[in-house]
Every structure is written in C-alpha cells, then in structure tokens.
Length: 442
Image (cartoon, rainbow, N blue to C red):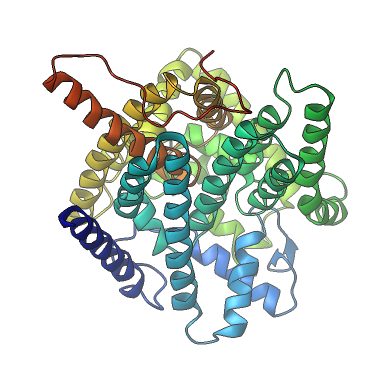
C-alpha cells in the first residue's frame, strides 16, 4: 500500500511538472527556457494555408518542412483563433502522456509489469520528453509515432499478422509527413514483417507494409512533382541539412552560426522560411537551392578529408550523449545552460538504465533486442551525413530508451538481490514469453 501511494504521488508530481511546462508559455511564441526553435516557420506555413496561399513562402512552393505539423497548426488557428498556441501545447501535453503510456506498455510486454511501471515514471520525468511538450514544433507528435511503431514491431515479432503489418506501414507513412527522417522506419518494419523464416506470408506482409507506407505520402509526392517540375519528390531539406552539419556542427543557434551558413550557402532558413519578398523572392527555387547545397556539402566533405572521422565522432557524441547541450550553449543565459547541463546528466543516467535493460533483454528475447539494436543503428547511420544534435534524437530514440530503462531498473534490482544472496549472475527478467509460440533464445 505504501509503495502504491508513493508511486501515485510521483505520478502526480510528474503531471504537475508537465502541466507547468505547457501552462507557463501559454500563448507565447517561446517558453522562457527555450533556446529558440522553428516555430515561426511552422506558423508562417499554417497562416499561408489558412489564407489560401497554399504550402508556400511568399508565394513560392516549399518542401523544406513536412506538411503534417503545419496542417495541425492551421486547424488549431481556425478552432482557437486567439489561443491556438496554448491549444496546441495542451494537445501536446495529452499526446506526451500517451507516448509515455505506450512506452510503459511496451516495457511491460518485454520485461513484465514492474518494468512497465518503472518505465511510466521514467518517461514522465525524462527531461527531453517533458521539454518538447512546451515547444510548438513536431517532436512530441513524432515521439508518439515512434513509441507506437516500436510497440507494433514487437507485436509483429510476437504474433506475425496482416493487421499489425498494415498498422506499421501506416505509422511509417504518417510519421514521414511529420518528420522526414521517420521514413527510415520502413526498413525496420520490413524486417519485422518479412524476417527470414516467415515464407510467402512474410513477403506478402512486407509488400503490404510498403504499400501502406506509400499511401499517405502519395498526395505529398504528387504535389511536389507538379510544383517543382519533377525535380523534387520528397524533401528539399537534405542538401542544406548535410551542408549545415559541416558548416556549424554545434547548431544554428550559436552567435556565429548564421553568418557561417550565409558565407557558405548564401542564405539561411531565415531568408527562406518567410513571407518577406525581399528575402524569399531574392532566392531561386528550392530545387535549385537543394542542388547547390549538395554541391557545397560534397566540396566540404572533400576539403575535410580525414577530418570527417573526428567530425563524425563529435556528431555521434552530440546525438547519443547530448554533448551539444554542454559544449554548444554559449549563446544561452547561465541559468538555461545550467538547466540543460542537469538534463544531460539525467540523460546519461537514462542511457545507463537502458543499457542494463537491453543487456537483460538479450538473455531472454534475442530476436526483439536484435531488431531494436538494428533500429537504433539504422536511425543513427541515416543521420550521420546530416545534422546530429539532441533535438533530432529525441523523437526517434528517447522513447526506446525509456522502454529499455524500465527493464534496466528491474534488472539492476534483481542483480542486487542476487548479490545479496551470494550470486553475481544477472538473471533473465521475468516473465520471458516466447515469440510465435516458440523459444526466442537463439
């Protein structure tokens, strides 16, 4: 009874904290602790949609950002003309809670009920997942899609089926309309639906998954082909992203970041994502900007030579260890730098718990943990040529870390109990259900 009371009290504190993160900024553009974001770009797109100007900046078609989040903002503007910013933040508050519940459900499925409760608490207090709920950009929705996708992958492994394969496909397709990099999920979903040994049924499920990945994307691709004369299919962000990752790896928010980008590319997103004609109309089509940015990126790769190895290590460190939140925050006020540093320390703890959970899972469900490792490695490699900072990791990796951390808490508790009884072995977590009615230990 005492433990239940403590658990509920902790949940209550977490809910209050998350509510404050949403309520304090309210209708303002930025939260007081925000380091800046892409909110103005999203709002400009939403306003242009509502004014009948299409998906454009200053009348020029754009594919620089995926359309999902601007459409949500445009809807909120119509429903809540004065308080649409607050409405979106409260929607994200609810979606953030659903994300944590899904992570907890997946942890319970993999490790048992105690791990699920641990994951619930960990997710509610995870700094990055709390932070993004107060920011008006797409990370909160993308994190929910990631958590649902990972849950669906494990469900497909446990009980292969056409419905779960179809659900995975739709999740990937919809997710790619909110974050371009979510398209990388398709490879992992295909491995789950059509893994070796599943025969013709697996191939059929894989084809169904790919078809349903494409379905939500068809209108977007057709529109891009039409407005860009066949020169753009999916996005115009990859070239600039690749170049900026070499020009200013620490992020665009630092003092000298925009100047360096202008020197190399001739423009920044501030010139592109605006309705001000003196800025946007001075630039060519995004298809031309994309080609030029890729040319700059290739030139910088050649100039860096072997230096690309050390740069890649830095990018991996920023992406996985959040070192950018320690070493690239000079432009932020001291209090905000301290807050971010504290968040990094908590992230390292989360990583350690997730590693313990993954190690324990290896001893009970190797098929699942192998696919989750493939997911993490694939998403990392997909990002390696591009910008790799904490914000890019949060919606794609942190739901997985929360899930594994729940198992890590239980695994460490069991190991401590074993040591107290004189055994140092780390046991497999209970329960260890089988996949598809057979043992999964090989």
